[in-house]
Image 1 (cartoon, rainbow, N blue to C red):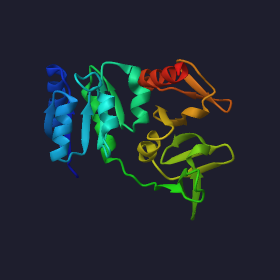
Image 2: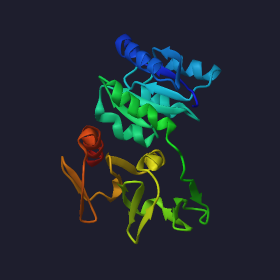
Image 3: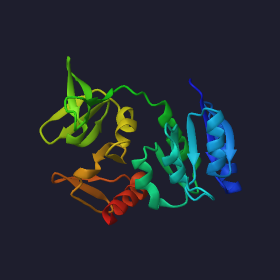
Image 4: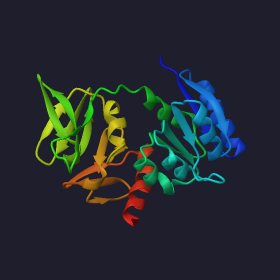
Length: 239
């Protein structure tokens, strides 16, 4: 199993200690440094490489998201914050997860396990247009590879060893685990709202505390996903 080097950027001693302890319990993580502010982290990254940053948002001198925006080629990032208000901004900066303090170990483990998820789909860009690039993925359907443009996807549903991808014009069934494509999609316009569903945020026409509506279909929000999903959707609604 590959080892991932990581740093913790956290100015509060207790959360830093908790995260350090969690990292030490995970065999594929290797803690390289604990930085009390973003400037220390910048100095470390100038001299060392790392695969993952656990990043607090409210830091002295330079805020966490400002620090992340300043990095030209950032490693993987998991936000660790007591505030849910920055979830949307975090995901727009391609973080792989957003952990709310106090962080439980099982939730921490779920986040870092995303590093080991198999990246089977190939994420590419359509170069046919010089002005507009449309991202797509090729999926195996029977003996063919079918191109699906990401901006056409409404939602993706897990059905045992398969996923059903619903777009405006068609539905395909392909043999993947939902977790295998979650990382790729979460970096764009997609949000996992249930253990069986990923949805396109811009296709949501309505939502409540229990479900979202896309193309007249009601899709449930899972209990363990509810807090983060609602915070993202409410922030988006305010914007």
